[in-house]
Length: 418
Image (cartoon, rainbow, N blue to C red; front, side, top):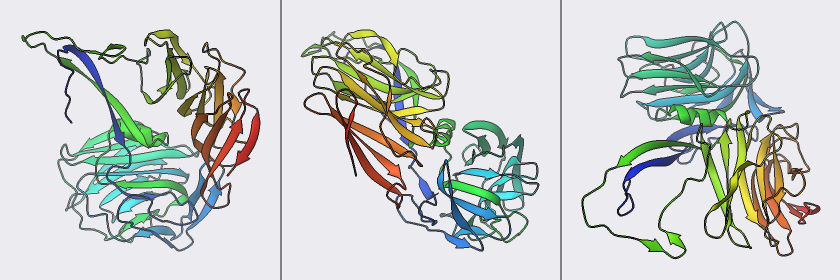
């Protein structure tokens, strides 16, 4: 990464960095459509259902892998090129009193639920296993579990629901000398004592050790992870210069006033009456996971008022905002909200007038609420109305489909189209 400061700049600055969670993703199994097709980009390494392995529709996760703990699993040929650095992650719902392998790269790298429903991870070092027994138990609900191995530091790490729970210094690298294939839900080298009983979803294999921030983003179904680093630029004793652009100084400003936690997924729009609005998601600022915020600016670039919480409902996650200007000088913001419509993700919105005051209450966009409705986008229309689009899972009977809803400036529906 290279940072080039503006000419004549000196002082402190914060760099915001975003990493795609698709980077070095070698295998990704969502089980949507009732299969084990690899959803990662690049060479597909599809899985095969073995025994009684099947999929069922979970009310919160959609299609998920269902295993009965008696010789059924998903098998993937090979071990993804024997990565020296690795991350295994999945969502699981299980309980019992036996060892249960979640993902096993030939028993050379293993993510496991132990006999006490505790998290266990291991790597094979050529003569035995470096095993991390965390002692941290999962619940009987859906849990996000993950392990990473960083070969540079020889560190094995385990995460539960996005939080680091334990690490182990191994002083060893991974030696791939056990089984030849990758198994989801069973032992990777033939033992029948580690069959998984329960449900698995969103199984992932990476050829790198994800950071703690990336694991936290995975646990909240994000597609990218953001972080920041503070640096200082020292002054150079040279001739001073001034630089201006039309309308103001050639400089940047920090939009979010609250800096605790993460603020990202920013979107902005220019207003028809001059000025602009920026919206973003902020973690735990509203007291309950992610929330949506916005800041309005006048035509000179000066902030108008303070940053504002957009979503009225704060239970669980509200995230992935999008924004559009309206012809009357106002604007509308839409976002995803988890479980607000009682079944997975739903799309909601709030309209604001030209003074930045909420016009009416927040409203639901999607009328079909079964499964997930997500990734909203919005565009303003002449006359003050607007159209919202989103993707809906299983509404058309086959995975995700695209839907749209046309609303008046009063957020009254005119049409729903696919």
